[in-house]
Image (spheres, rainbow, N blue to C red):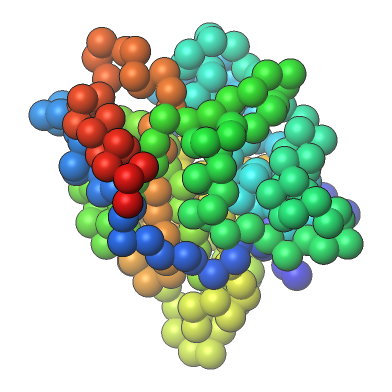
Length: 263
């Protein structure tokens, strides 16, 4: 395992995303959005919403393969910063309890990681308990990682996105050197040669998306995303059902969700 610039010697990177599970019934982002406002060329949640300031802990991902749950926690922090106007005190214990639960209750000795699609379905149906309260989401939808405009739209309008990556070994050296994740060549550039990882996309620049992972921000290039992303999801927080200025067409979304319940 490689060390990241700015991360202490006792902190290491753990992966933990299981192979992507596909479902043809998954909603598509464009199917329930209203007419779109202008999408800025660069944007990041933490810059656009500096108060309340949200933390970027490891959430146990330096010791356990709980990246899927850590990504959920980072996104929940930002959902609730908008809705509750405060920074939740989500703990490593909150994240790990849900992680072990979704792994089947086998505990730390198992630690095999999670299937993103299964975890999203559970987040929507059962929710999870963090900072003393249960939180769930309204819906989620597939995003085309090869469509830069669609990625920007998801991140800007829906408070980020959840991104599954088949990381190459070359990404280890890049993050250890404080460099962006970018496409390289040779045997270390093979997709998945390091392993599967899940990150929360908090924003984007001209160069590509910016993710929160392992307690820091990491720049990703657009070409890296296109080559190594095997699943990307826009996630609709429950608050969007009630916001007058929501980009979500709630009527359409309810219709799609109703159809899913009968298929």
